[in-house]
Image (cartoon, rainbow, N blue to C red; front, side, top):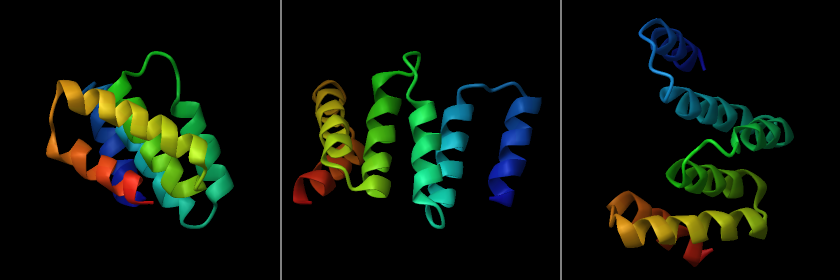
Length: 102
């Protein structure tokens, strides 16, 4: 958490706003260890229409890992598959395989 706070401060100082989503997601994942409800609320706050489908796919993948809800799994899996069709990235494939095995 401390490292993430320091990294967020540096990103703001050098004005790289696109890292804000990733930093907020990391914060939520850290909080999920102790408070899944709070982490879920934080993740839901990240689901704004301005974020691209790549980020939404990762968000719902991570939300499923916190909530275990089929709805989050389906949303993440559907988005990951669409993205993977356009950009065959091994990281997306690993996440797809992981979700399909659950």
